[in-house]
Amino acid sequence: MPENLAENIECALFRIKRASLRAGRDPGQIKLIAVSKTVPAERLKEAFDCGVADFGENRIQEAKTKMDSLAGLPVRWHFIGHLQTNKAGAAVEMGFELIHSVDSERLLYMLEKLAARAGRIQRALIEVKLSGEPAKHGVSEEFFPGLLRACREAPHIRIEGLMTVPPYSSDPEDARPYFARLRALKEKAEEEGFTLPHLSMGMSHDFEVAIEEGATMVRIGTAIFGGRQK
Ligand SMILES: *Cc1c(COP(=O)(O)O)cnc(C)c1O
Image 1 (tube, helix red, strand yellow):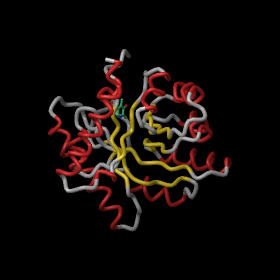
Image 2: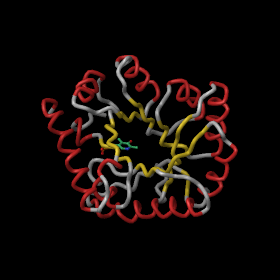
Image 3: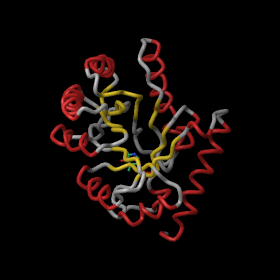
Image 4: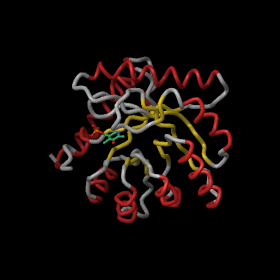
């Protein structure tokens, strides 16, 4: 339903606002990231014209093509996919606003080295895998504290929070314990002196539950751009 883009965006923003108010939160504290993977650049331009300025991509090459197409527009790009260490250099050079998916010390140190070389501070989140699903990426809860401590030795990587993708379920309530768990990890880390303002959690089918559980960024694809082909 391409012609409904403006309506979809408006509807998503309205639902974000409603969920925030229901949870007693300020809607201004929640950022909408339009997940534009597989969506052609022209559609991103249309979304931008409707007021969306944050886009989420999960492939480096695809993101690069779209960055070129939208060059000159004040758009913020988020990398939300699994980042292979051999693509870390490209990711840093491309100037992503935020890399949501730091999930190993190896990747962290690679990013640190490349950001230092580029003379940049790279903002990032740690992706935590809270389910045992083998196909999913993210650091396990067991290794999360070690990875967080390692961030202290990476002065060019500014870790600003946590991200997670719960197991898919058609019932958004099934995601609630995972979102609550991510928030608990963040709060515990903050008690230990880390500053982690952000929780990137919630997708098209469960973002309202994520907001109720403390999300500061929701990553919404299909509810904005419609179903994906691939
Ligand atoms: C694709 C994707 C999304 C968006 O999913 P929708 O269900 O289309 O909203 C969010 N986060 C990540 C990490 C994704 O890969």
